[in-house]
Length: 339
Ligand code: MG
Image (cartoon, rainbow, N blue to C red; front, side, top):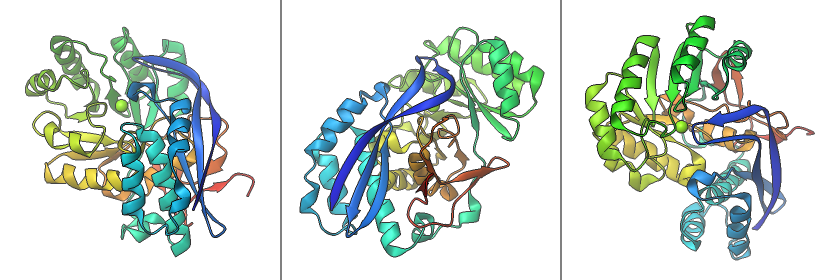
């Protein structure tokens, strides 16, 4: 098999701001694995939160000796080799995992969800993300998101109440709140969540810093809204220790090294009595369509990373009235827009 990769700058429709960062362009690496003329597509959307950049992704991918593998169906051997090549680098590993799964699906002529035995009609609704902004911009973004029945609101900055009040002036839709570790003390987290309980919020994602599990458990005992782990839940080994601390986990391919481990995280979370959400970074339709193949197994989806981008070079999963619609194409189901 042959592995190749190229950097691509995803351009955001609006400046995207969360509690720790702000940007207009989100660089990714698009990956291809070729076997007997068939090409599997993958993507790495690196996050500085997890110590990655396109440079570190390319450095990691350049270490892989992919020519020594000639059977794409040996997913376990190939992906164990990839994971053991160096620690961390989870989005670079995810890119390889996605491309290999896409290749296997294409060789079998099956969408991955069918290969896994999932009901493609059972995809959940996806939320649409509203980043942190000034009230007039928030108002405009909420109006633009008219077709989405659920909004995911980024909080954890200095104007949380102002943001929610602005949104509630425009819509009464279900809101999900993501604080991105932005509430730095347990008291602040409890106070903000108690206020949000009155505002039609469904759950709170990552209220406290990822490492502060004790503080998060303290918060959870004092609030009524479910808490979902994102930054606290990167890979499989994180899941069991979140039992009793959170009510669910947000799985992202870019944090967990790809579809193979994401599937294991879903089953582990179920065994621990945790709800499951599938989320994303700012990604093209490659990463988003890959994650969407798993979505019939989850409770909540936040797969809008490609919708926030103006120059997605691919098309794959679509959204109809807020519901994810898996394409009837093999593998992850993407094609380049010029096809
Ligand atoms: Mg999050």
